Image: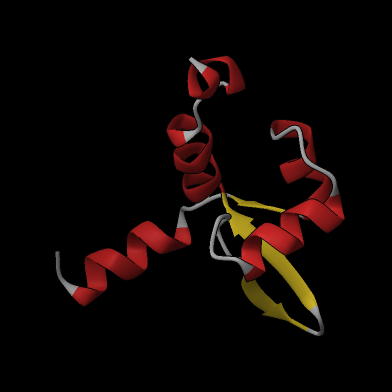
Length: 74
């Protein structure tokens, strides 16, 4: 992929604010930030002025990679 194509794809990426992320994952705000610090949750992109958002594709990939708790116990 060329830099121009990557930039074009990035422009069309949907960004999610924290409440939208929380609507998709069963985690509270503090837990999301703790997991980010531990490298176990995608990091957001900085939009400026202290505003951050997560790439929808990264959140969807994280969700797809999660295993139900019942499977881990078995």
